[in-house]
Amino acid sequence: MAPAAASTERDRVGPHPSYIEIAKPYILQSRIQSCLNVISMSDAKEDGVRLQGVTWIDNVRRALQLPIRTFNTAVIYYHKFRLLHSENEYNWADAAAAALFTACKIEDTLKKSREILCANWNLKVGIGEHASPDDPRFENHSKLIIGLERLMLESAGFDFRNRYPQELMIKMAKAVGLDKHNEAKTVWNISVDLYRTFAPLKQTTPTLSIACVELAARLHERRAEKIVDVGVLKYSKWKTSRAEVMETMLDLLDLYTHHRTATNVGPNYSLETFINVRITLNQEAERYKIPRFTIYATESPYFTAEVTPNANGTPKPRNGIDPTSPLTPATPDTISPKQTHPPTSAIGIRGQNGTVRFMLDAARARDERAEVDKFHKTEEEEYEVEVAIEPDRKRVR
Image (tube, rainbow, N blue to C red; front, side, top):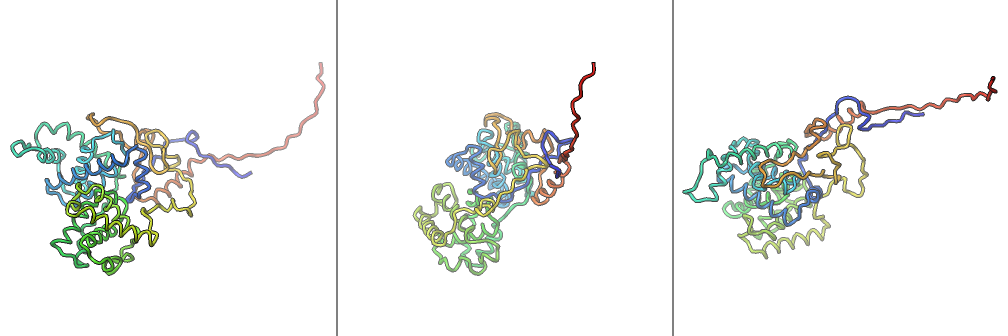
């Protein structure tokens, strides 16, 4: 008969082949919602924590005079961290400070954790009560921020590839002839408000830039036919689509509709202005059957799923338990925000049972997994042999 192959954890001989965590530069809405469901985060609570954290990062980076690229990177790390850790594991202000501290290192705009905490303290008190970074009150808190830095990097998969839409956005605004003193300023403020949503996790740099320019033009009552998929904003030139641009603008309009006062652009316009723009986009989406959110190829009804292990030779449990979702592993219960210890690492018990390696190239990870699996297969062969049965003999006494 043909050889039968089997591969199980208990049959493995030798050291563990290690786990592989693949970085995710783009996270679409379905996976984001799945992450929030796993950590039991309600929509209202998530909105509040997200807006508070981003506002904290924006205020402190302005006080420290950090560039916009540091703000972009910090918010991305803050979003990714929250998708893996439940709200009872950390304080949102600590997570925001750790994200900004990590971003300062990545973008080479170095600031000590004490300086970040001191800047936040000085924003809340009068001039006479301002403190210096050497103040002893920041000692324990700064150690907590440094401990959270590693978890920030793990949550992002040690992926230092970041997107900065502002540079391209300004060039597009100049190309379409927006006024630099009024309309272009609105474009810039929209790009900052964009990071109060999950759009930067989902879309490419050209898509974010085009969406900011188009929304600003619509708010200033510019004619849509002169900016939609024409000239320098041609979608085919930037490898994007109307559906992706529409999704980004609707994410922004959701923000301006429900949390107008918590944004930079919202207070400058009435609620009716945003609602009218949203109605126009909804009518266009209904007319051309444009979906609200982009979906993964695996979510298409025409896709045939192929079951593959998530690690080299073994399914990937996180924190010692099986995933509760096919998209996002479960996060363990750890500490309350009042404790002075950082939350448990997202790699959990996997780091104790085997090495966890972070990779950027998904194709390379698949090839390595297939190669390693060859050495952990137990092959068995079955043979059928006919044996003659002798007749019974009488016992001799």
